[in-house]
Image 1 (cartoon, rainbow, N blue to C red):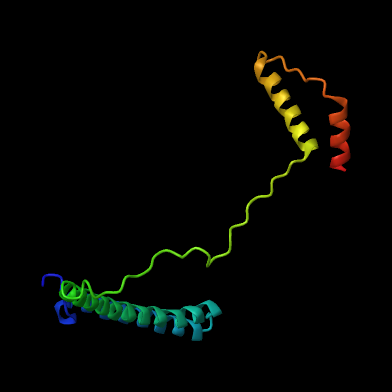
Image 2: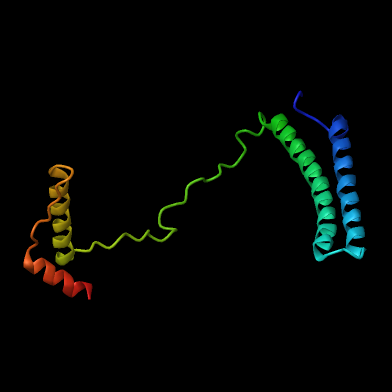
Length: 152
């Protein structure tokens, strides 16, 4: 039982929780005093309310830690006896429960396909020549007219 621990076996952790809680409460008290002073702002009030919440979280985290440690120890002790008695947890979603994922609609626009071929031709001519000499091919007249009509 090396991993088993009880709250009284963690004196350093208990001291840390007490000190952290007291520090958070003291900071809340200090911010409340700043808020009540003549130079106090709403920000001081916010901090005055926030620090006690931090103190409460420290205490909550400590008790949660102790409870999880106890549960882990109990599981380790009873693991051998109840290993076959544990129900199997289903990890996958059965098919048919969720709706089918939508697929992208395939556009078979002939004007767009012709324009893409034109761009591919431009790119091929642009990359095939010497770096300084760029030429543009003469486009097919029907492709330009149809692209201009579809572009609006």
